[in-house]
Length: 267
Image 1: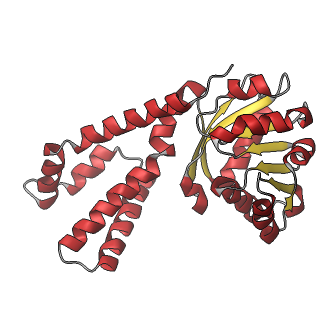
Image 2: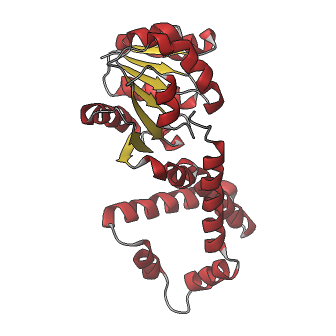
């Protein structure tokens, strides 16, 4: 099976590297980019082939569209005459709907829309997948298998993609923001920066692992740490007084709203 990655940016390069690590024959992996030099730079070190967008579309069994949303329409215009009837088109461009792609690709094209996130760089990504009108169960399974190379995959209705963008797509940035604040607090309290960083990172990793491994509700896990009259309760009281929970809700609503605003009209 030949897989072509159209777009050699961060997510395209991440997926390419993951496919090679997973055992895919590099000779069956194609890379295209509007900068031919960039395509060569990404493809060469892993043994993949740098090709033009039209050659990739003509050759691939799975065509991964990994360009920026504003570049999508021009890319589709360039390749649409080369896309075969049996190819699976997987789009990882934010805010681009399956209907937008189906209207511009050949009639009956099988499309899958994906919202990945940056932890895919370390094979711990979260990808939310929505099939288009003509995508068969077998093709959806192909898309899932492809994305499982970089982490977890969840199939959702496309109407939820803006919410997914707000939660997992943008989510790593929220976590990094909190981690940054906790490290700064450690420095304020007199810890060396590297010590504060080590404490915060391992605490974050341990807490996330507890949630996943125990499957307990976060409220239960939080209460286990919160002794009556203790230090944790005092800290949580401050967070509630500063309406941190409400701020997170408002922030994610803003992200979802902006995702919807960025989606170009399908027609």
